[in-house]
Length: 190
View 1: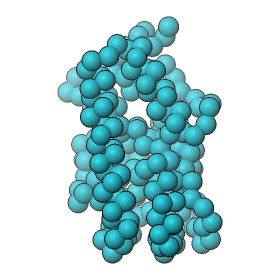
View 2: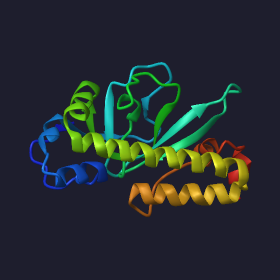
View 3: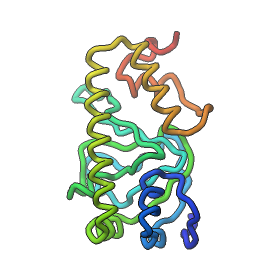
View 4: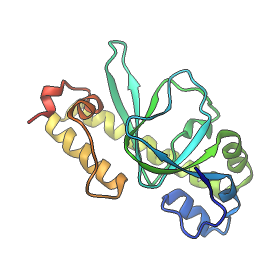
């Protein structure tokens, strides 16, 4: 993990947009971290300690059902932030954030994030806009999960991950894909 002292250009779109407003003071609170596939960034009932701004990593926001199956409700990549509930005043959630495509992210302590979001109007405004975008994605995912066949949902999911990862190649297993689509593994083998 290395502290960022000199940031020329952010790969994360939220941070890049913020740096264009002239505010680069938040950069001293960021550190670059490598995140492994299947790493859990936050879990149900646990405190969110860090906010992550993905650079080339992709994170699934997953809800767990009463029958122990899980379903992806959102995807966060280089356009967003993982840990958004902190911005909304919540430090514990009922869902899980799991790295699906390994890579790097910029990490900020929760307390520093809250402070920056409160004092910086531009940052606050960007987070509001991102919250709306993520909410729209969650609604679209719920609609697709209800209305479309597994093949269509899988195609949509792969395109979303491709876009968020910003690269053509990424590792994933059939088991992981079946969990994200909330289907049996046999449904994604063909």
